Image (cartoon, rainbow, N blue to C red):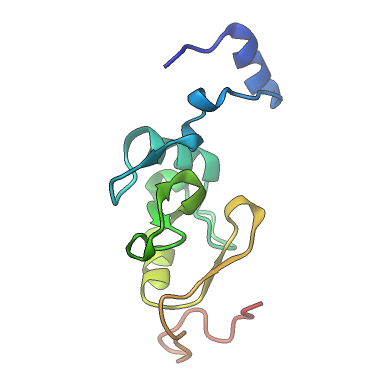
Length: 129
């Protein structure tokens, strides 16, 4: 990897930087099922917190989730990955409707029919829109 120049670092600190594609870790992808190394670090830094609406748990302690499931052809690439805390990752994995804030888009994932039992479903009665 090519090191950054002092001008690039200054632009990054000012929020005006445009990194060359080869240096942008969010442009990386992996053939592996799980994101690791620099790709995982880049997703954690990009997201900052769990991507479930209203959740403020830090991304550094979150799990990296495929927005489009890997088993359905979802790529292990930054644009398809998001940080979800264990609780919200489990909710999504169990087929409950979950809207996320990843990249400002409202993305709905449904692995199966939503559960509506108010005792077992923390999202029961939530507005799906």
